[in-house]
Length: 330
Image 1: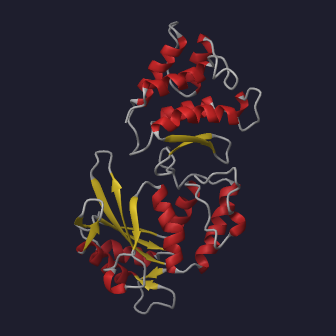
Image 2 (image 1 turned 45 degrees about the vertical axis):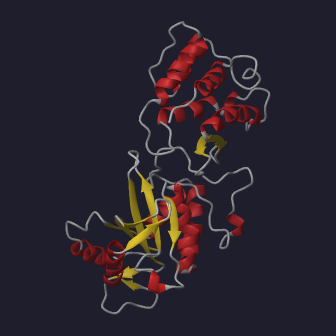
């Protein structure tokens, strides 16, 4: 997926601050400041004295040829270019959110299927229009959280305490996995258990090589334990393990290719805690052939991933926590 020369040229004009379109909204950069621009985004490009627009266009083409972290994603270096270009401190005769600059940039990017927007941190990001997925490196769920993120995490935790299993799936897991790049996410529901075969959700993930992996999810709202008699609201890990094995042994129909396929990997997801004893039991139960096929996530994993992907909280539980109109979910 290559950008058109016209698109690259328009972005190069914005970086250079060339007249007529870019001049009202972007800083004019001479040879020295073009070198400084690319140094600030941690690259070693130095202007060689040639025509500025053509030199920047060649640099952008090189950057866009770098490896991409996934389908519908863009190289990290290019994302840094856009972030630096749209720095709000460089606003010229505009409001602080730079609406004119954003409109001009999007006129070029939309030709390639992407759209620029400002996040809550006042940084500029890109998202893929067709999938609404943010074109960014996978977020780390283990990084330190800001005060605002910790507050959202507490709100989601309170929601998970009372959410039903269907609400956990529909309002939390489905948006989360869509944002993480999974496709064709289909919830089996709980009305017809006879047809579920242990699957609450099935979905697929397209590798950069265009090969497709199929995933199933077995979700439980409460704690997973390994005791002989589980308390009310808890589920036994042995039962969930059996359901995961059923999931791997039954075919699903993919309407996009018109064929029945087997699930490659299974997620066991708990809205509560997976106890240490349950984790140990599951680890011992998975032999070498199944260890890579069955994975598990508990409440902590859900909370951390939900926060770092900046998804809006479930509106039915926290209507006051909806993002502001000028704060697009990301």
